[in-house]
Length: 249
Image 1: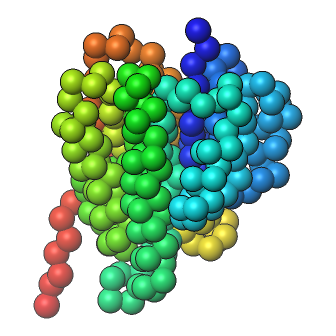
Image 2: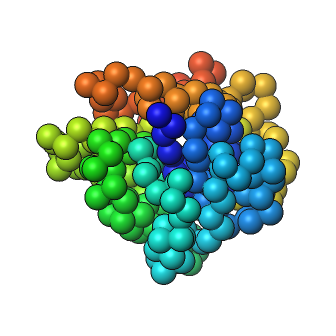
């Protein structure tokens, strides 16, 4: 029986890699994102019977609901939800941060994720499906300039654990995947398109790729249904834990 997965933020990075991994293996994939042209290219690549594109801003709750209600009959029975859409904005310390950027991260990484999850819970319970939330090592390990981004990912991790508790007995599996240094558009978005900053960050580090995380999601989704991975923290070998900061007078 063909299964269906919904992937938010499917236009680049982890999301696009997850879409390609599952569509290439015969799943039906609902790919969401703001950039319709990128979604259409995925449909062109795999066909409309394999991928359904839903272009909307994840922060727009009304557009989200309309997109879910407009799903074709073949894509309505969602077995796996991957809450991947998210972003970091800015690298300034809290006292110099842009409040609008904080609000955008909260609206995207927290509010939109919770809204979509709430909307799809009845279907996921009926299907005894799975929820995979893409969090970050920033949920656990703070760093200078991480402030609200790290806090939003801490929400994602804790929300995942809370869902796991609430969904006890339903058969629904819940996993938080928490990547470390990964080369996607993440740093370009965070720095408003500073390619040099992105290149410098990843140079020589052999960072995580989108395909690496796609394989992690694939593994989680294909485990025997009596197993649940609660949290999966993934770092490249080149990255480890930072030391404590000391300010000296």
